[in-house]
Amino acid sequence: MDVVRIVECCREQDVIAAVVSHRWPERCDADLRDHVAACEICQDVAEVAAAFLVDQDADYQPVRVPSSAHMWWRLQMRARQDAARAALRPINVAQGLVAAAVTSLAVAVIAFGWAATSWSQWSWSEMAAGLQPAANTVVNSVLSVPTITPQTTLVLGAIAVGLILMPVAVYFALSE
Image (cartoon, rainbow, N blue to C red; front, side, top):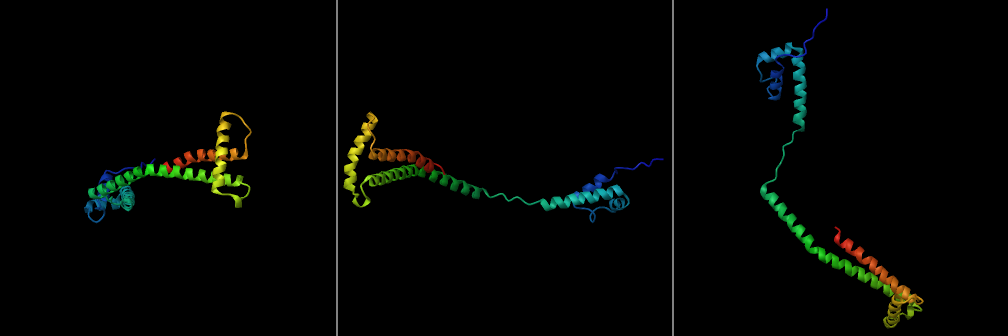
C-alpha cells in the first residue's frame, strides 16, 4: 500500500502573508501558530519565507534622490565647463600650430648650423646669407631636376618636418 504524501497545505498563503507582513510569529493569531507547529509543510514554508525576507531586508538600501536645486546647480556647472572647453578649442589649435612652427624653425636653424663649417663659426648673418641660395635651390629643384646640395636637403627636411608636425599638433590640440 502506497502512502500518499501531501505536498501543499491550505494555510500556506496565510503563513506567507504573516511572514511578509512581519507579523510572524509574535503578532499573528494563536490558531495559525498552532497550525504551523503541527503542519510540517507550513513549518518549511515559514522557514523559507523568513530566510527570503531576511535576505531581502539585508539588500534593501534607501535611495537618496538629490534635490532639484542641487541638480540645477550641477547642470549649470556642467554647462559652464562645456562652454569653457568650447571657448578654449581655437586657442588650443593656435598653440598647436605655433608649437609646430617653432619646432620646424628650430629644425631649420639646427640644419643650417649643421651645414656651417663649424658651430663656432655659425652666426645669424651667415644663416641669412645661406638662406637665399638655399631657397633659390629649392625653387629650382621644384621647377627642374638639378643636383641636390646638402643645404637643399636640409631645407626640404625642415619643410617636411613642419608639414608632418602641423597636423599632429592640430590633432593633439583638438583631442581632449
